[in-house]
Amino acid sequence: MDNTIKRLPDAEFTVMKAIWHSESPITTLVINEHLSSDISWKPQTLLTILARLTEKGFLNSERKGRERCYTALITEEEYLEIETGNFLSRYSGNSIGDLVKALCADNDLSKKEIEELRALLSQKGMN
Image (cartoon, rainbow, N blue to C red):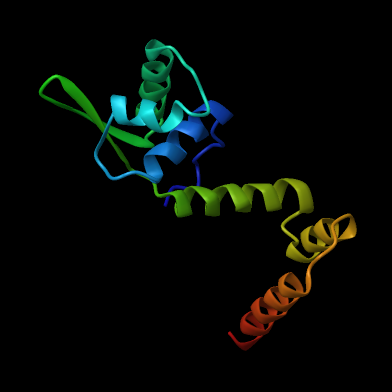
């Protein structure tokens, strides 16, 4: 996993989510179908975003006949792990405790969420 990965702009992240939640390799047509319910981009816009993602190392692009197929080179979990670390570093000085305090200050936690947090903390304490 490459920690130099930068945060994706919203449009690129939306395309990556469509790819991550589909079977690989995926064609431009299928990506567009996944996006069409939420977004109405011109075909060239999608091609530009896919080219950027390929350039950034998020996708592999390969021509199969008349179609261009894309495969994710970075998993959603890897990306979210890096993004979470970047967020933690930027907004709470790498302090998970400070982040949790900030999140809990203005948000009511359900009993289930509190139990999940306790279980996570208990599990971390055992390691």
